[in-house]
Image 1: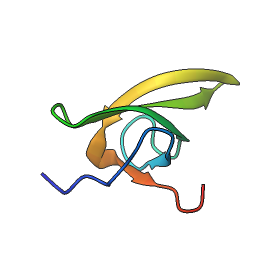
Image 2: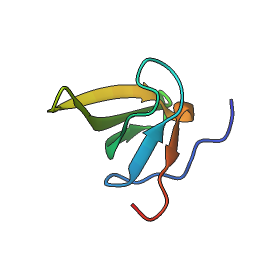
Image 3: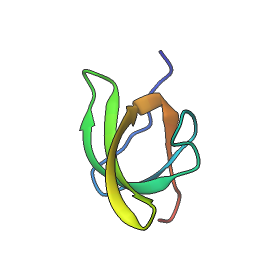
Length: 63
């Protein structure tokens, strides 16, 4: 498995793959055992919590 980005709750990330590709939002939780990250994105103007694979996100610099 590719190395996971070093993330902390509160970091803003960009989803790079999958159905939520190109969405950005703050990290709420990281489950390193399951290789998953929970973040909040705006979908139709509402905050929505999503859970995506850790290797499909990248930290947004200076966010």
